[in-house]
Amino acid sequence: MMGRERIEYKTADQIRLMRAAGLVVAEALDAVAELIVEGTTTAQLDAVAEQVIRGAGAIPSFIGVGHPPFPSTLCVSVNEEVVHGIPGPRVLRAGDVVSVDCGAVLKGWHGDAAFSAVVPGPPDTVDPDDLALNEATREGLWHGIAALAVGERLNVVGAAVQDSVGDRYSLVEDYGGHGIGTSMHQPPHVLNYRTRDAGPRLKAGICLAIEPMLTRGSPATLLGEDRWTVVTQDGTNAAHWEHTVALTKAGLWVLTARDGGEAELARLSAPFAPLD
Image (cartoon, rainbow, N blue to C red; front, side, top):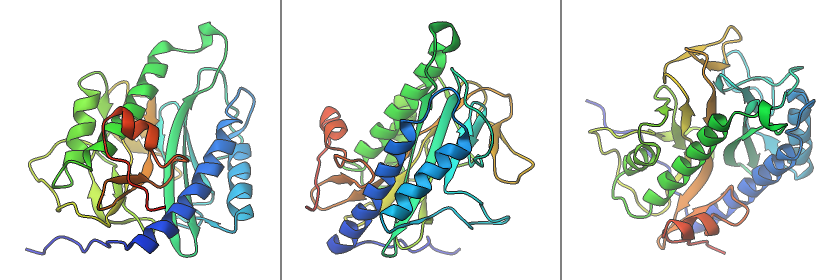
């Protein structure tokens, strides 16, 4: 039997380079978040993100990836779309659940993050259950991140996400997080649920993109005709949150959060350990 795939552990200087890429992603997502209002098209979100990334001297990570080549800077997934939605002429409506995934490469190092939001509107257009779904997904992400600081092996992340979510929503099992560094996707695969396999040992220098995806119904998914967009099989809404995180000798540094994750890590009593 083959051993586990080799994990690329980073030096302190390499993590600092990843932090620079992560801040570009954070800036792009902040710009996109301001435009998630009724009447905006998903293509407009994509154009703004590309402008921010290229203006910072970075390159969008997603363009040209895969088969067929992904055509856009962002993945924008709406309502029943879980991940990998292709931006286009779709117009956002009040109450839509919009998930935005962004990656950038700067000086050869990648950052990757995602958030979801419910398009604001009058109370009768916004489903409180969608707001709760989104918050549960965000909370699951941070519990998964915090677990890195105290766990010995990787599956503490999935266990923490699952414990945070409980039985309120379904965790998508077909997709998960990943290692990240000189390429956008590296070993190890990061599960969002508990398994018997404890996974590889955690040690300083590992950098991971942690990204839970939750649905209001079944966790089963289908691949759309464009061979990219992933949708829920039962048509229920989904949410997706992600951050790139470095495990340092002293704790955690969330490379795609503007504050490095300091506020959320403090809330969860997890050690915040930036290298700068």
